[in-house]
Each structure stands twice: as C-alpha cells, then as structure tokens.
Length: 116
Image 1 (cartoon, rainbow, N blue to C red):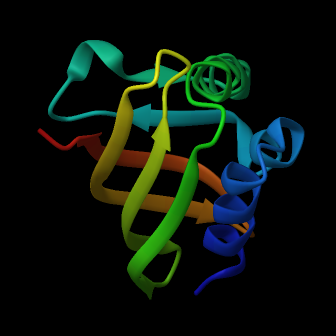
Image 2: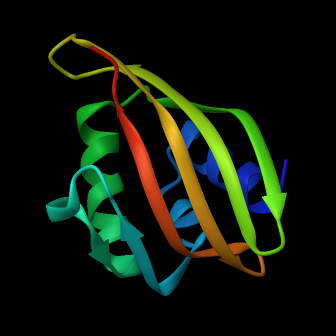
C-alpha cells in the first residue's frame, strides 16, 4: 500500500482530522462523476466534510481492500463502516482514483457510496 493510502486510512480510523487534511494539497480537487453537484475544490472543504462525518459517525473505520499504483495515479477500493449518532449502521464501499503529488492527493475521482 502506498504511503498516501496508509496515512489516509490511519487518519480516518483514528479520527485525526488534521492528519487527514494534511493528506491533501491545498488546491485538491474532488470529482464525483456519479454525483457531479457534490464535486469540490480545496483542503478547507476536505476539513469541513470530514469534521461533519466524524461528528455523525464517531466510530467510523476505513479499510483499503485493494490498490494499485501507476506512476502518480493510485486506484484503490475502500470499505468504511460505523454507526451514526442515531444508532444507524453505516457501510460505504467503492473506488477512489487519486492523482498524488508526492504523498498528498492533488485530485481524485470519488466513487464511494453507501451500500443499500
């Protein structure tokens, strides 16, 4: 597993918001091809989104199931589990394709969604 994926997985599972944000460049671009209106740009949005998720799902854990790297592009399959503060189990699965600059994400195509 790449350093980026290991750092990101650890930051999510330990709920370390600042470590998580540091995994992304300041001008990080998240493209969500299946939900284009949710796409965004910026490290500040990463912080806002994950702070909200850590609040709503305080026991969230992340696992990288598979990954492969081709130059500066990392393809990864993720599974995230947890329980909302209302007691609803959460299960998310999907693929994230990341372009890295060093060990930080500069851009991603994000296909992670709740399992129905």
